[in-house]
Image 1 (cartoon, rainbow, N blue to C red):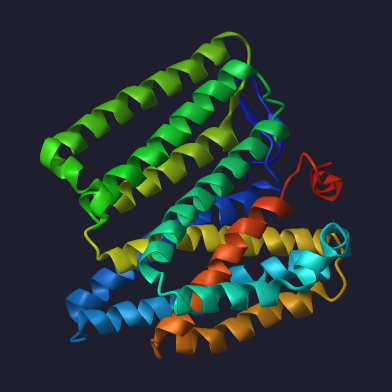
Image 2: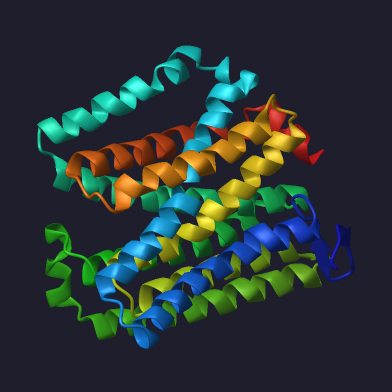
Length: 333
């Protein structure tokens, strides 16, 4: 087992431990391939209709992974006294905000616009979580040089945003983007992107070895996490031939698992009152909520679900600021 250490070639300071990080940060990415394999196997070897397979996988995804991580946001905001005291009125009335927002979207019939906006908001949310882990690995391994920050951020964001932009242009139906298909056929766009990605990867790795030549060990956890996340997303957007509804699961499930692991790690190590009871209840309530969300399709129910998602996106960007919240930094001291 790899432990927190530094050698002549590699710096290997993990966030918690090699076992924890490998299981939940890296191992969670395999959930993407597990859902992929399950969809392929059920399509190939059973008589189930495609919509039945999609609904079944969405129920498992919602009940076990996605809804629990949304509800766990409230553990941080309403159970954690330190965080609650920062915004007591906002957190106390959050359920009213979610309800009013959902009813407004339904009443004014702004579903299409809301769905597009929340899709892009979700992309940004996922990008920021992965970048947060990369920044945490940089801090744990005392990597603060500005040139390294430039290489890491440009390589990460250009690759992730490139995947999203190309997917939105060629695989979805956003009218504003349809014109690009005429000027740049998908085959040319794909070749151009992968050429850029190959060159960028070689330049990035070359910089890592240049640092090594300067006597600076390679930050192994950061590099492994960076490439595993980028590889997974490129694979999802360009090589896994699944419906868009399944792609949503593939893009999100590893994020949910990481959130479960992080919340459990935070709750236990912060000694939150009755944490394990609240944590387990998020899975019980999620199972009950997943039934109407997935099987009893109703636009109002789905808007309420997406409004809860939107609230999670917004609040999650506030409650995990290591630079502003000392109780978070203590976890890694």
